[in-house]
Image 1 (cartoon, helix red, strand yellow):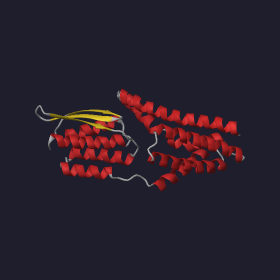
Image 2 (image 1 turned 90 degrees about the vertical axis):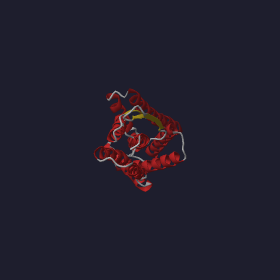
Image 3 (image 1 turned 90 degrees about the horizontal axis):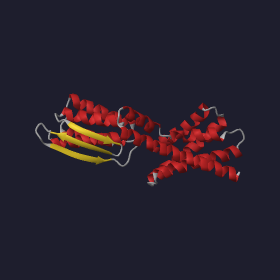
Image 4 (image 1 turned 30 degrees about the vertical axis):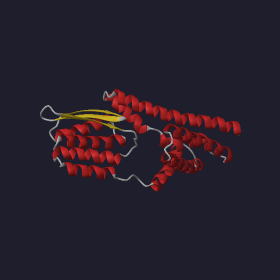
Amino acid sequence: MEIREVLDIALEAGEILLRNGAETYRVEDSITRICNAYGHPCEAIVLPTGIFLTVYSSGFESETSVRRIKVRTLDLTKIDRINSFSRKISSHPLSYEEAKKELEEIKRLGYYPPAIQFIASTVVSFAYAILFGGNLTDGIIAFVIGGLLYLMNFFMVKSDYFPFLIYFVIGFFSGFTSMISEFLISGSNAYIIIISSIIMFLPGVAMTNGIRDLLASDTISGLTRLGEAFLIVLALGMGVWLSILTAHYII
């Protein structure tokens, strides 16, 4: 396979991994596996916002390319499929057309439908309310607020709002409605409801990947991921704090 085709396949696989929440070491390992499978050594530098890849031929030729990553989400199914793809190529190299076809199929994999995500958000909020020591009333209120928060997040993301503004609004809405619920419904605990309804927005995977990157000496990637996670938590916390102050002032 020509060097440019190997470069294209490796970059495409790395982009899918990085866009869907994979750790830096996993992206670099998959890219290296693919290039080595076709007999081409490579040098890959992966950051949360981009991939820098140079592939060498058996002679003195080399090809370098950069792939910018602007949007990142979390899809473990696609990460698993690319892991399997890179390992399959290591043992049985595919042709360029076959590899591109399989990568396109992985890219087209759909996420869970919005209805399923909505149901999951409500059930998770209810379950955490009970887990944190709340009563049935707390669970029902968290169930409702969790669903509303999912809808707010869904439409704001679709409208391309600034990410940290979304988290701030979510935190504010969760805190304000929880405080009002405690005032109107006796026996409810606003703080349990707040925690239960926003816990699904906490960046647990980003924090874990950041720590994993730091332990693997990927300092820039680790600090970037941890910084992003810190800002998300800060935006949520500021929204909740301001909502509690507002609710106390109104009530």
